[in-house]
Length: 403
Ligand SMILES: *Cc1c(COP(=O)(O)O)cnc(C)c1O
Image 1 (spheres, rainbow, N blue to C red):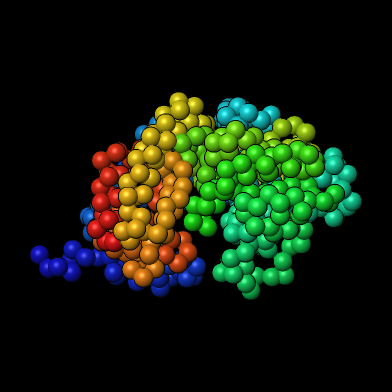
Image 2 (cartoon, protein in one colour):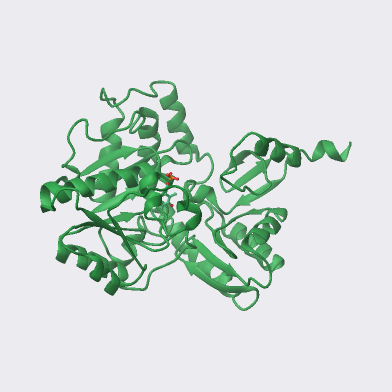
């Protein structure tokens, strides 16, 4: 057989690049099938997926229960729009509300839409409930945040790549250093309607705030009658070893913003969850989405909540995460400068003298491990929560080998 017949990847990468805007810089891997924690490329090479769709694949690729729910729903009803009620809607909203311990849920599709929803709800709550003067509402956010890509959301990004050239920017946001309670307190005034934070900053490199920060944010929000909005799109739904990353410090935000894993790796599903006094401010016509809360999304996401209710995935993440962090910790001083994270989620800083994060990910891919760099020489490991201990050990061995 001719070698070229076996290596179709370079041509497929070039073809993909030829026909799309260059808003991503993917690793040269062309995936054609997947199951559990493993993907297979068009040349038949297998990789352990240590990115898991930025945590959209917490339950692995094609989890049988999720695929079964999707198949069953595909054969009955896929879309109605919210102009009508469908028979999957209540079950999903109720299951998610109960998982969050909140009165109400508002389903959307992508993470950015859920963040936009939270911003709109917080502003309306500010005007109608808190009594902030009209059009004066402010929302405090953190440096290094990542909440999505809409024009309003990039307006308060501190990442020049995400923000530059996309102005004019939406006003009404104040940016403070992440993890700094004094700065947060100083930024809050009578116009503040919400503090919007990731309990762990994912895109920034899996930054865990200092202990006591999240409870401190909770206390400041309560004292000042400000909504604490936790963007748990990446940190939530089992990733850190608990259902929500806020759970580690016993913190309950006023609004959860969820996405990614909520769609089970099958369809985009996002949502905000909050109590009646907050989400109850919306009236018909004020917010919506054609696809938000569609029957297929609800059927899959109800099953996702069902998986989370077993506690199995949170437990796996906690136990395997302890193992992952111990193994990675042993590499600090041997090519790694630092390791951060919780559960099956790690941000690792590679010694920049050795290589960039991009180069590390390319070498890992050659060895059959898929990971993604974030900034400079930081890479992020977030394998599906169904990964086996031996697979995890093997992935860390590959990392040690390239270092
Ligand atoms: C991915 C992500 C988003 C945006 O989600 P999309 O589905 O890509 O719009 C928002 N917030 C956080 C914390 C994320 O990780």
